[in-house]
Image: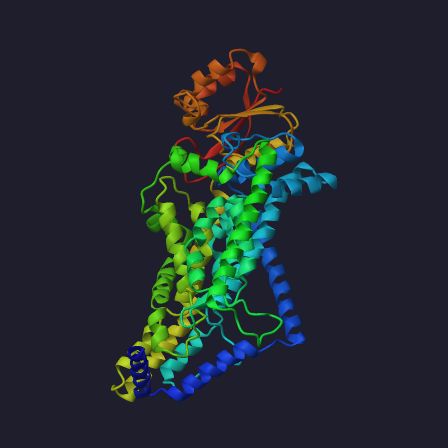
Length: 620
């Protein structure tokens, strides 16, 4: 204890030598902490704050609805086949269920949400094809808006914010004043700017993936998670009960959501919340042991509640007692079925996945991570730093999630989508601190002449003015992948199915496209005959090759074997234009002709795809 006290005394002596008024610093720090505990908002301030929240929510919602309209491309099969298609089958009685549902490794909680939406439209007699087509996307835009507000709230809680009543300690050097003003800029605003302009969130967040809904619930859970105070050994702020409720919803959508919070659970048990009485602020907080027991019970009770609810839902729809997380673990981890969909090296998320998702702000994120690691040192030296305003605790779920998912051979961008808000908050932290070496320069050059110090301060001031320009450039570069992938890349299959939706002559459609690379019944909302190339994992049967493999190995042979007579010919074939020369003889012999084509992509990333999608029909 004496050693720590001497270290602290030496630290404060060092600050005294540098021109700081130590007594005033401590006075301001204690005064600020006291005000934070005791200040209550007046009714007018509360109404003003609520009004601002509603206005902000409205504008963000309008932005996200526009976001949902702009995104017109295909990204991954699960957007349709694991949510909308299942919900359509539950509500309207037709829709394809993939092999995952037959093996009971998918939970019904997520598609049930869209099934309720479909049922409401059906009850209101608004179940027109165009409404059924757009409703899930618009609902997901609404859900994503809460994630945007959650990111803002989390940033507001962990990053210092500029307030009119903030008083800086007196006798600070000129350079320190500039740094302090710069650091106290509204950092939560920077975060929401990065959030709304992040190309991957724009591209993926409005899609009806379980990952997108998981992203919202995890963000909301983090936004009200109690922040550990390493000085008091307790966690402060937020609401543990509400946070665990959101975590339960996230795990109900995707059981793997618990991975992100695994490092935070022991952390909050070691630094438990105070569980103060909200009605009586003067009441003493509960003891550490009592708080730990309350925290543990919160996790156990709510965890069991959501496990029972999801088990009952899954058992009802599967018509059999089913614990989906166990089945999921068996197939994807024990049997390694995920390898069937491709494998990547261990370092893929670090060197490819996360940098691609962050794109232009990756340097700022790296700076933010470095500054977060340095926070304990800064907290020891700078006594007026708020111990509850830090991002060090966010590094635990960030690094842990990347590590765990890196162990799995099959990797996808959306698997780590839920940690993107943490990275954007760290990017904002890096953006407001990327010139934080200036104070160190002045501390290490106190003996230099006054003119040179003023000259360096002027240079720093110029750098500060150029910062908005730098951020604008970063946002501009983020717009390039945002627009290309949202508007131009892989849109042909979507356009083709939209054509089938409005074509009354389409009564029997065969999609000669890569397996599941297109929407299905939930998109067209017509109960017609449709078929596609099956690609279920071979581990589920005795076959050595899938139907998709057979077709792309020899398209003409596949058609001749599967359609020996004209009796069972479909009315429409859909395929990429690189297939057309290989099956032209079959099409001509059976009176098929091209009725339309759609642009698909400029950048062909799969040899099974091409730049255009063709639709052929034999309807005269």
